[in-house]
Length: 297
Image (cartoon, rainbow, N blue to C red):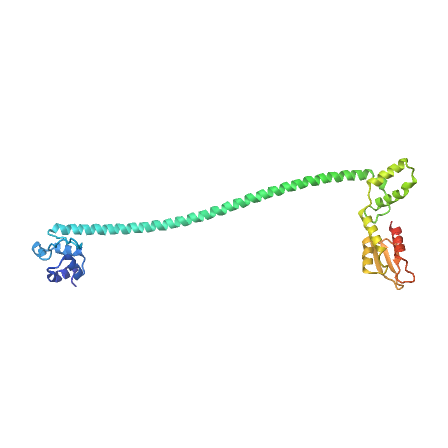
């Protein structure tokens, strides 16, 4: 198989009168390679193929370099080697740049991960700070509440000490049916007996002071209101009547065969009566209310 130089020498006789550029286009060889091959020929033979061309003025045509010495071919070879070296160096630089870009990408990715971690840490610190602040506020509220409770305890202790010191005045072995029943009874009794004392009596002043500083319990006030409502109701065992009696403290039992309905106050058998439901023995509402009132008050 022929080498490229041998092929060039075979086709060279057909290139007489052609410029180096034309030779390159016809034979498919680069211009520097043609100069290289021509430079290896004797001067007499080389002169047959390399001739000066007229310089282009207006149409900017290429000028063909004339090689007349062998040294010029050596220079071309040196330039080609330098070009190859530069290409190799350029490729090395490109690889280095690619490596740097890859390292830079990895570094940027790591920096982003660090930024994300710092952002998460910053958020956690803020949340922790907020939780500490809220916990501190809650603790202050609890401390204030404890202080209030301690003050309430002091007040209750004073009330307890006072009640303990006056327990002899309110002592009663009879069981009370609701809290404050004994005070309600005393207020009722004092109110009724107040008129039996003279205007300038010491007892009268003491009892008036007692009435002004002690009030009837809410429980008794509700029972009085319920009894007032009973006067306007039918004494038949309607649902409203039963509900009202229960609110006073009565237990309402089922009707007997005779048609009467037994009621008992606070489960105490000493305070019970019956409500007639037949027209022949029915008492009016006012009498029944009065009977109930006299029984529990």
